[in-house]
Amino acid sequence: MKYIFVTGGVISSLGKGLTAAALGTLLEHRGLKVVIQKFDPYLNVDPGTMNPYQHGEVYVLDDGAETDLDLGHYERFTHCRLSRKNNLTSGQIYETIIAQERRGDYLGKTVQVVPHVTNEIKKRIRAVADDVGKGVLITEIGGTTGDIEGLPFLEAIRQFSLEVGHDNVFFMHVTLVPYISVAGELKTKPTQQSVAKLREIGIMPHALICRTEQPLSREVRQKISMFCNVPIEAVIEEMDVAHSIYEVPLMLQKEKLDDIVCRHLRLHQRPLKMNAWHGFVKRVIKPKYKTTIAVVGKYMDLQDAYKSIYESLTHAGAHHDCAVEVVNVDAEHIERDGAANKLKNVDGILVPGGFGDRGTEGKIAAAAYARKSKKPYLGLCLGMQIAVIDFARHVAKLSKANSTEFNVYTPHPVISLLEEQKTIQHKGASMRLGAWPCRIIKGTRTAELYRQTMISERHRHRYEFNNLYRRQFEDLGMIFSGGSPRGDLIEIVELRNHPWFIGCQFHPEFQSKPNRPHPLFRGFIGATLNARRKR
Image 1 (tube, rainbow, N blue to C red):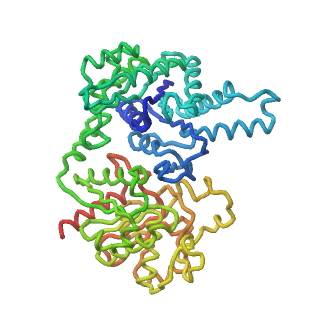
Image 2 (tube, helix red, strand yellow):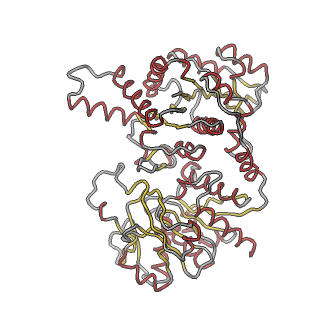
Image 3 (cartoon, helix red, strand yellow):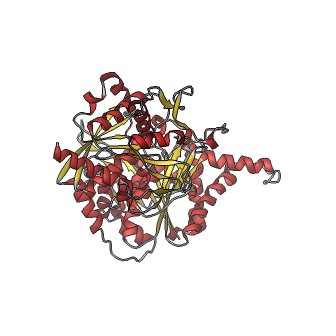
């Protein structure tokens, strides 16, 4: 087993996760088995209870783990299927250690950061490695070098490198080389200080990934190489990409990062072949067609809140050789200005998941506008529930219909709390989470898209469609095209007299990949292209 540790310096949000994922892409294309994990220093047990404005999207895995959004990059850029073992937080570590101490597992010893916390971190590295068997494990350390909460993780990987041998470990440090426009210069001092801090801890990076807005000259590379004690060929330029994050693997390939890693780790692999990836990137950068999608949500000021949705739209767009222009529409603005004013010029409408009643009426108005104007509509999780509420109010004439999440006293609870949720007291990791099977009904639009009768999709919700209204809604034109194997939970709805209108209770965006777009997103973008041609 070979190990790559990715650290970051100078500032946060440099793209360590994206860089780790891009390296994973390159190594996979060389025939290596790759798995990636993320260590987060914050004390939350997981991001499941964190506000999207604090953390961004919560990415859900097959086993129900609520994880950091970087794990979405890992699964999109590689073929690995991750589990809760692949995302470790300080909260999980301390929770485990304190539970062990309370049980008396330490036999009265003083519990300390070294060795107890560091040993628990190393244990999690080995747990993932044992599952893989043979290949490359890439571990990203969240935060910035020098952060107090990140020190136990850095100490743990320093110890780990000694235990497995230097030839089996590669340290990669992502840093910032800022351009000072007034001076007209790239400044290397922040990188020098960041590496110095890392060396104080006892870690010597083997490669520096230099995030920069301007190309690194030979002189700048030599300066970084000399003061950071890294070979000049291992000073890697990683500029801001012009069009798409999927250019990053090609950029790192051009810098020969995969060659440097394989040479250090003594991996003699086949030459790199990236033909399919090049083709995908070409369709993203220079597409033949264009479509416009309105994403109607409530966290519109933060790009990361709907990260997987935006990437899934890109994947589906590339499949159709189509540029997808996303128009972010705040649901509260629809409440204020009306749906037509915000949505009349788009080709399709997407309502994503969410929690709480803020902006709910605006989302319902968006679904109603899509239904009446015959614009393609895709509702995800809450977006499906919103479509059901609109149908209940305006087609079934149940004017006060609602979800009990928003109004517990509604006379028509068309969306209600899952039965097993009614006794739950704690919020963390208590929703219906992870991959669940779904049976597709033959003869539906959904069946045409999936081309199979049994699928598995990832969930994150507490509320569901109320089956008491099923027969009534079917008679009025709503099609229930997917449900749990026993038929007790509705998973997918369609509208009979509509060109393309689908809502799903799950999150299909968590299973879309660059050259394998999710069927629902692929169908949705295809429908918007048809609508655009007609319009």
